Length: 288
Image (cartoon, rainbow, N blue to C red):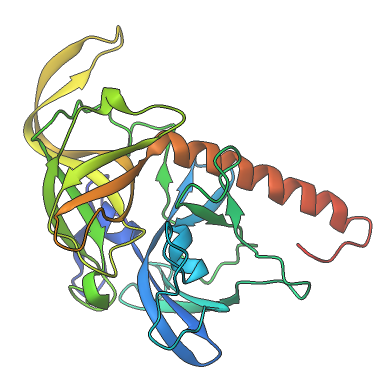
């Protein structure tokens, strides 16, 4: 069950921060062969709006985002994805349910949705689902103060990448937090290049991780008038900043993050895609 807005508590002792419960461990397969592992998470604007899974494009294509080279030593590209969702807390809170899904339709078109403006240039994609009651949905909410608290984050301030380096977990399928620093001003993010850099020791498997600013005690935030104020709080607050997509060079700790504004555009495109396919389904289209 959710004890409060800060922690998730399992009946037999799990006590983790909510961002830990939001991380999803994923594996990409070709047939029965696991090619790679990575990270994903759910996003929604509000509790009532469309919810989709977000991860990096290169996780699903199996190809380097810039060079197009195959990432697997087997020269195979994935055709299925396994997603480990947290089981409903009222059922068995320490368990995860694995959901296996094809990545391509019978006609060869991918199930994922790409960024509506940047298309394949953006290393972020969305997957839509028909949700059942066998998984616990715990998305990052883009339009609420739970995950977008208005925390001001500047250069050299801490940020955390919450995922699965080398496919490793902390306990069971809970993620590992890697913490580094914002490498430049977020004001430099633009619509044509909605990315920013962080300085953090990250590794393979963390692609697709949520990047947040986690604060306990004193921090800066925006007030209702848009001004910056200093706040002291006994409990943790966090700011969802974006999705980590990898280092700029194998010998560097500088990594690229796709900004939350790009994720919001992608989420809206996913919601529109789901609506259009549902409407077609009423007239015999079974692709949804």
